[in-house]
Amino acid sequence: MTTTTANDTPWSLEVLLDLFDVTRVDTDRFTGATGIAGEHGRVVVEGTQVLAQAIVAVAQRFPDKSVRSAQAVFARAVTVGPPVDFDIDVVHEGRSTATAVVAAGQNGKRCVTVTVLADVPTADLITHHLPRPEVATPAEAFAARMPLHGREVRLVDVAEVNSPDEVGPPELHAWLKYDPVPERDDLAKALLAHFTGHLGISTTMRAHAGIGTSQAHLTVSTAPMTIAVSFHEPVRWDGWILYTHESTQVGAGMSYVRGTVHTEAGALLASFVQDGLIRPLRASDSAVESNARL
Image 1: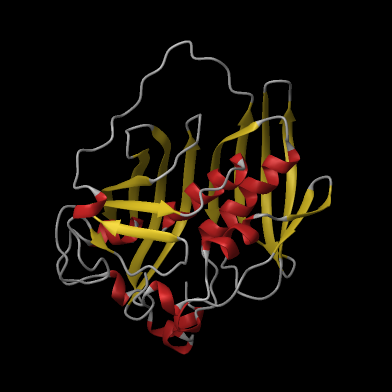
Image 2: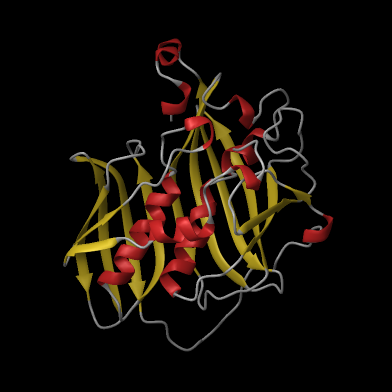
């Protein structure tokens, strides 16, 4: 989580989308940059940034298909600096569906594995979707200090998401507005996936007095360990979108969060789940600078 205003950061939506747009090296190999250090010089790259890059790589590998789901396991931290290599193992490539496993590595070590399903969408045979939750409007929500030029975030019923004093049910609703919204399908889906890891751990912590995300990497060890996102066609929007998070379980050092992404008009764009690590910081971790911790 962050504690500065949007005017204090060199990060922007344009920079983020450029990072997502990985470069093709060979038929099944791509490379991507990590970007710059985060707040307070933090050098650990967000796992969802790598997930977003993998989605774009697979979309380029299967240009006649649409990415429908991506399931990532974050096994090792990616750090700011050296490029990230994306090696695509095509499991199946047919006329209507394709499956690939993406190995994202840095300095010769595999860090993230992403399994991606792509297909050719067809006309509806049957259709239904979960309705958008009836929550406060963006105008009624609290502006969140999550700096990124070109993105606005507003939280429902939560004034300071990082604070241990923000106690409530294990759920969070976040309104987001991007300007501009990418026209390319792969970049739009990458952008939706990027935010799926931002508030899951805060959602879990909210139900427990005296613990908040402000303690992450200082007294509490936290990190998203897996994220799975499914895209519900067509993935197009303008204006505000609502991320809904619900933590259904936490224990034994891991939390489980499920969520949805709706347009303000009520269309369901995506669904996601996350396994997050929440544990006391080990004494041995004190030897590791806080900006390099998971």
